[in-house]
Length: 373
Image 1 (cartoon, rainbow, N blue to C red):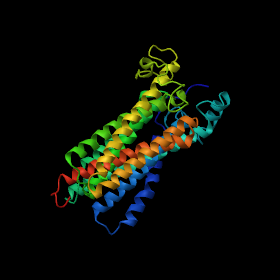
Image 2 (cartoon, one colour):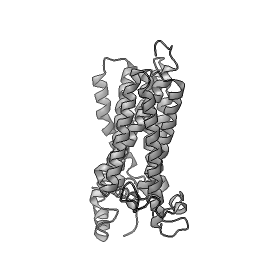
Image 3 (cartoon, rainbow, N blue to C red):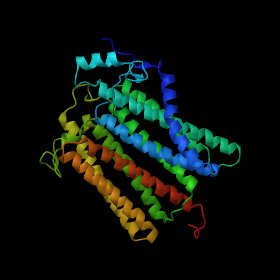
Image 4 (cartoon, rainbow, N blue to C red):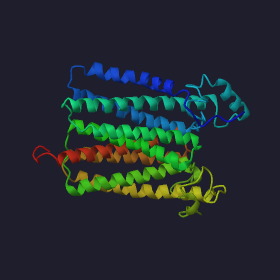
């Protein structure tokens, strides 16, 4: 059977209409629930709902990757040039018959296409946010700059491009990892946008504000390492804890493991990726986790020693860190169960949202008088 074209724009209009249809429900809910509110309140409600749905989309993206469904439809944006797997039944059946456990099966095709439908729906909601923000600005009723929503719109377009490259470049690890980080970037933008509407200050001393920013940077770096572990299928390179392969420093190949520009399963010179490279990827992620947990513990301790209003944030940080430790440990000792892997992604996303909220509120506090903060 001939391979499909990597880019087939035939179903693009139908995909866009389907995304718009999916977005009607959330838009109607916000309108009905806040029909008597000020426009800014409706925009904030829509931003929060879009944030929630984007969080869910990140988790479904992890489910798509972890079930090996990323190539369930090997072309983009549709499935064998159709808007759904129903129209590609014959092509999928032929591919599944030729390779029953291969990347293309009916189940994997549906998982992949549902992910694309949800992404399109979120894209429509972000587009509406951008348009509505500029309308409010022109009518001189905007509470925040419309460039927040515009930046989110540009970001989601880039995220869609990386989603297409994920398929057409056959799960190229650097692209898949960038796609994961792009999803978290959308969470950052939407969280900051919702907090700009809320204007709830969090008075943090300059040292704690800087420490929170440092923990945020360390978290992004550690999530990137986690994405590199997942996209290279290096989770099971170390199946024991706290050691790896009964050693505190097992044989590792950092050169091949951290060669970024290479295909999946391929080393720096085009040869098969050695197992020691997978070990290096996994062990580096563990070392990064130690650094991140130490940073979170120090920040939480500083917050607990401060004002009573800071203790909630300290407890929230410690709770997310505990969630990440337990879900990460479960991935190792339970042979990478699907639920634990998705829970680990959820914890990473929750940590980013939590830290972004703290930084946004601390920024608000620096813009208001100390008494009000």
